[in-house]
Amino acid sequence: MAADETRDGVDLTNLDQPLFDGAGATKRDLVDYLDAVRDRILPVLRERPLSVVRVRPGQEPFMQKNLPKYAPAWVRSVSVWAEASRRQVTYALCDDRKTLLWFANQRAVEFHPALYAGGHPTHLVLDLDPPEHDDSFSLAVRGALLVRQALTDMGLAGAVKTSGAKGVHVFVPVLEGTAMDDLAAATRALAARAERLDPALATTAFIREDREGKVFLDSTRAGGATVVATYSPRIRPGVPVSFPLAWADLEQVAPGDFTLRTAPGLLKDGDPWAEHMPAPQRLPADLVEEGHTIPVARVQAMHEGKRRARARRAE
Image: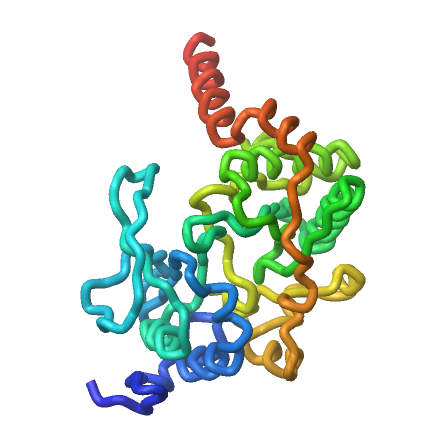
């Protein structure tokens, strides 16, 4: 297939095709955006096993974890054992402009890196998922402010970004050498402490029907989970992007303010994610200790689901 353009040795094709239904953008817009923000997005992807969400013309979006066999030899990769599927997965490592452009040409719209680099966890993350509501994002913001208060109470600090959808992500950088099970425990305890600050607003209930219209403080992102990268576009109408914010600005914005078209101009020459991110921190021992007493949400939900199923059969 003849290339429309070549950048950094990468042939780019079909650049004037619509990106996806409702995008209001073309594949060229995606390529131009990722190239424009490469100096900001590459640092949050580098050395991290990468999953991407791609969208082909006339098809539903799909998540790609395994690096395709047709990928160029210069795309770096890493093989990781996936406990859930009991198999080795060969993930791409998107470390440079050339690889980023190749993914853009593959119509990779969303970039979901692992929360560890070089085998070491780097951040504690809470994903705040608001209920379906006309004011969903403002509820997520209120939940994020609870998390910030809980962090402040422990002498910790975090950075915040929009998810690019209706939610908010809070990242807390941790010292190298933090054990994965301790990080997961601390994430559970942080969510529980934020919930206790305002149980009418926030919940740690993993089962959706138990959330009662509250903001879900998702503590399950530790371990092998991923979170959409800062600056990554999302496959949603208008192509919003996950965008970093100062805590003071969080209540003044809406997710639609940050899109593939508007984000580069808002960034100018800055990198607010790097600027707002605190230095790595040691997790308080009492937070870790509390977390180890809290059941893993997915496991607890699985057992509860089985219990409820048995109860229904017995009726």
